[in-house]
Length: 218
Image 1 (cartoon, rainbow, N blue to C red):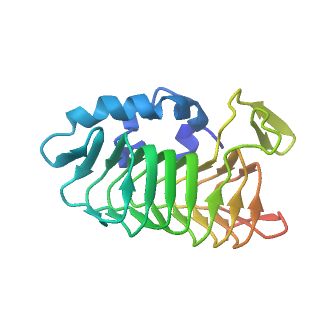
Image 2 (cartoon, rainbow, N blue to C red):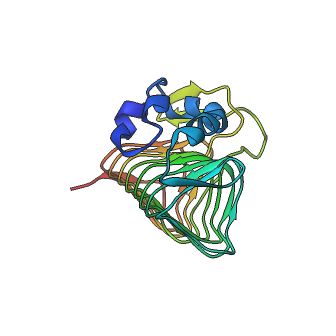
Image 3 (cartoon, helix red, strand yellow):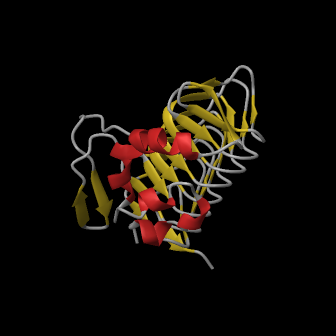
């Protein structure tokens, strides 16, 4: 329930071929920067290189107060709003919203992803039509700075990686002010209640409630 095939429809991202190389999504995090640097020069005339290693589709709307760090790619019809902070190593797909004071770092956002209000998204992959409510964040480093372990019930998956945020499947809804702890995986079509503190793997087609209870959608 936590492989790339389980979580994502790869037809909705420019990273399709890149992600296809891996079994688990967190395995792709290390190479995002190099992948963007390779992909950018191949994008064609519909994209402008607005500064070195920053490619923006001509139909995208980028506020003058937004910061686009390199390398990054901003897809067609995407809106990057006032004071958005893209630190770099960010592939943002088509028809996305990167909102007021949202911060992105080392991420892949599939098409139609929304991070519209005061979100931090780091070392994460957000699937097609996923949405983060206002103030929701991905925490990407453990407080003890140890390597991240993915917890799926009693199963523990050693990643060997220090920084992993959240892997959100297609059509995931994260409620306002929720925190996705390091190594959170949320399956397709699942919802997380507002103000939740999410850990481990949330199965597809589920609802994660405030007290950590997970129920199946009906």
